[in-house]
Amino acid sequence: MRHSEFWDRMDRHLGAGYSRVWAESHVMSILGGRTVTEALEAGEDPKTVWRAVHATRNLPASER
Image (cartoon, rainbow, N blue to C red):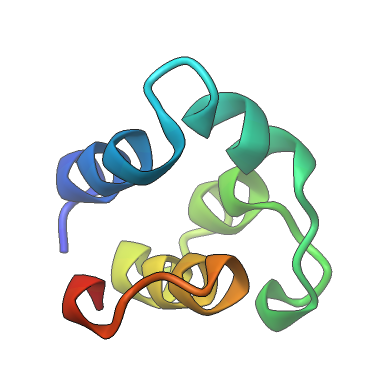
């Protein structure tokens, strides 16, 4: 998954105005106590980060 696809999904599920705020402020234990932004900046694969978001937000299985 590319970063652009990751952010498209985030925008679709959280809204374009809120997705970046949530990504910068919501710390997830599944990402090692990091935010989405921190995980991506550390080089974590966007697909891995998306799976963490998917699980945390309890999104539909069709969106995996």
